[in-house]
Amino acid sequence: MPAFRTLNDVDVAGKCVLIRVDLNVPVADGVVTDTTRIERVAPTIRELLGKNAAVIVLAHFERPKGKVVPELSLKPVAPALEKILGRPVRFVFTDWLSKPAVEVKPGQCVLMENTRFHPEEEKNGEGFSTLLASLGDIFVNDAFSAAHRAHCSTEGIAHHRPSYAGRAMEAELSALQAALEKPKRPLVAVVGGAKVSTKLELLGNLSAIANTIVIGGGMANTFLAAQGHDVGKSLCERDMAETARAILAGAAAKNCRILLPSDVVLAPEFKAGAPSRIASLAEITPADMILDVGPATIAAVNRAFDEAKTLVWNGPLGAFEIEPFDRATLACARHAAALTKTGKLASVAGGGDTVAALNHAGVAQDFTYISTAGGAFLEWLEGKSLPGVKALEV
Ligand code: 3PG
Ligand code: MG
Image (cartoon, rainbow, N blue to C red; front, side, top):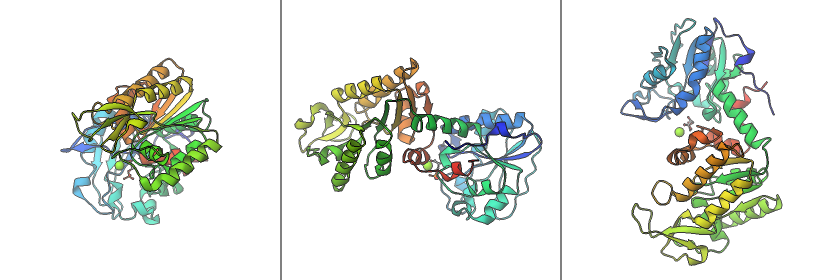
């Protein structure tokens, strides 16, 4: 396991610290509507300020594509950051085209404008990396969820200043390493979501690591169809049948058990109030849509959880956005949470929909670790090295 420099390895007093965080948070009518990502990084910023560092916060917001887009300013995020930190935060507007005049004294915190306003940010250009580095003495990366991007503020800058993992990054790396690199076995992975095509590498990597993979969500239909089951008008990537069979064969060769649905919840359409029924795979008709896994499958998944010591969860088991198709996701999430609470299971979950589903089940706080990362969490499960993390290795 690679080692990382952390804030334990540096005296920040009197230094100017550039800290990269992920403030790509949902904003509606100028107000931040989910502050989870801000809450995760606040302790690191507070620690730096408490140690009398001058703090310059760097972050991106959405995808302005290298131009100043006023609607994508980070300005509305500054009050939310200030409130959660409990310390004043000064917002510094800049179009980044020249070196901004930033005056920040030890114990003070400024938030800089969206780094993606600069045309070089996403190209990891040397000019912008140098400019960012010139603003401070050391670099702290606390944005795991942006670490799959090799951008100036996540990767390039680390080559110009002594670089450290922030506390949130540290927590994320140790949780993910514990779950995937030296897991207590059996290790069960739940992989859901709509499409097999977006999770090919992930399934390939996980089948070499996990003892069992539970496949749910729309992508399970592709596997069922590939095995010759009629899936009616369900979401299904028919052109992926060959690939799906190869994944199953590959997993079998690696002694990884794949748990597919054995029964399902059907409806004529994906709509609130649509009449639904529980059915075996043999009972699916051409007019049906599979929208969740059924009770026998829920029981099988929960049995796999009972036997497991580690769980990694990415993607819901059914179309959890509409009742009653949230039933399997709720039941299995609650079972995993209960096992975690008694200390029998270490549970790690991540990916946008996954966190929303676990929040819907009311159990997010009971999992061992919930990643706020989307793409970065997926790439980690794919076994890829993330450039923002790599740049912090000693
Ligand atoms: C995210 O929201 O997942 C991260 O902030 C990365 O954003 P990006 O996909 O626009 O790079
Ligand atoms: Mg995003």
